[in-house]
Length: 321
Image (tube, rainbow, N blue to C red; front, side):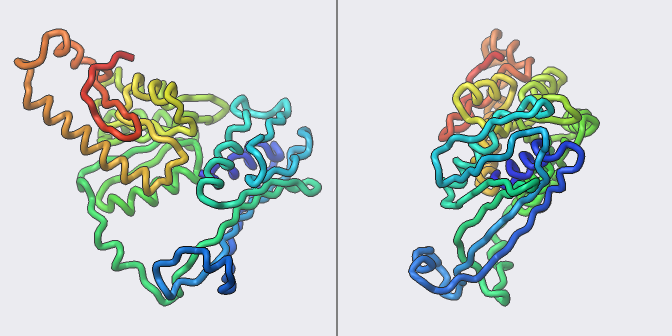
């Protein structure tokens, strides 16, 4: 989430002709001092390290210089705009960075020196020695279904790559594809979702080719055109109103981007299981045990969706958009 927002900010708010965005990562071994001893390491051979990500970009000369900003200060993100700034430039990215970094005990800093903008993210953790293998730990990974077709829509290249990597690791036999690089890919996603998708994951705020699109709007269109699979809306906002919008649009689940992707996939398994159980129960009941009013509603794929309140799964309630 942090690097996704930082790279997006550097690209959108940097030099409009050539932002020269560069990302570097450095891992440095730390001495076994008092600070390192504070790190809870379950493996005796683990080495305390500092991980530091640095993102640099050329500044937009038409915008005011970036003021120094840090997650160690109160959450007051900058919102300075140039006439060329995208409509979505509302400081939300820095708010997400501040929230996630503080929750994960990381530090993020933003500053400008001349025509270069610098963003740094760093934290203390532990690393295994190079000769240590993690392969035995992967034996417990089980695919829910080798026939899963999982499709995603996101305008962030980093998010697309991260989702593919984590989904393929957790569901090695599933077919995972991501879309959202441009408007043509959005249309391709819609066609593919209707043709073969079992699960679709949509970013709520999508900015492609200068267009502002919303995952909830795209999902509503897909439901009207006959998509009956599982749908999840992934958003940087998780207020109750945002969740309700996702559910009314036909999603079974709304998940915030502050949830780490591996944890999101764990929750996705639970939500999908509940969705399938709900489908099986409805099939067993049959039309004879369903009142005519609900039977008619069931013809509309938006009529029955699973509510998500962060703790419970599908309730099977009838919901109208």
